[in-house]
Image (cartoon, rainbow, N blue to C red; front, side, top):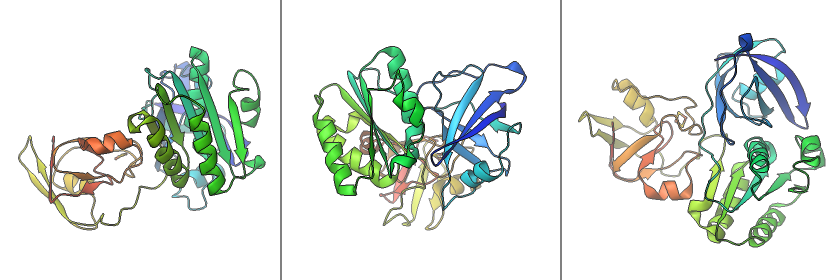
Length: 315
Ligand code: FES
């Protein structure tokens, strides 16, 4: 879909970009937690969470923090993007949805991880479902969407924690989790990897891994034994595809002529998700929950590998 940059504003360290459909077209609705692929003016494709008050309609909103180690996406949006430019975007996809069965939703955001979490808060408020949002930031000046978070309807359900040490952050997470009954509570987290790991570890102990949901748009997780060669056996075609050290399973599949949809190629969008029929994947993506990892029935070939010499996949 083609969209036009309608407005650009800065909110703390984040650049907030409003996108409007071209030609009066209505943009598709979406569920809270969804993201879109954006083809930037430099040709790079990046994934950004949608953080609108209302899903769909005539506009989307994304927020992008300038990353010092930017692979080009945040730098382009901060330095080159201008109101009036047109961009290509995908339809929204969601690998970070709210659990319909939850009786209580605890939302944890770290830094720019507030973007999908903000959408979730608005959705829960509209549905009149119980939730609490904990937003951890480096300092008070780093609070993105401060005005929105301090006004109704979200005010009173948002707690901002600024300048906490890692030890204080862990203690806060434990305290907040213990405030609510474990049964029926689902936990959602988005933010930097160490923050996500801290929340996921504590939450898994408290509410169980199946009730912990996370999304990260950072680099893929490195793994100590991630460079061991293995072979992919394609169940449907019977093909054997070797994956040597230093190459991704996705690249080897594409080279063997296997058509597989992909987008981010860094394990954060879920587009290349492939069913595993036998063998044990070595998960290096940033989107599967602990429960999904332990189920061993799918993997992201753009980054993930295999713990077993052979991985049988449903291709
Ligand atoms: S292409 Fe995005 S997770 Fe593999």
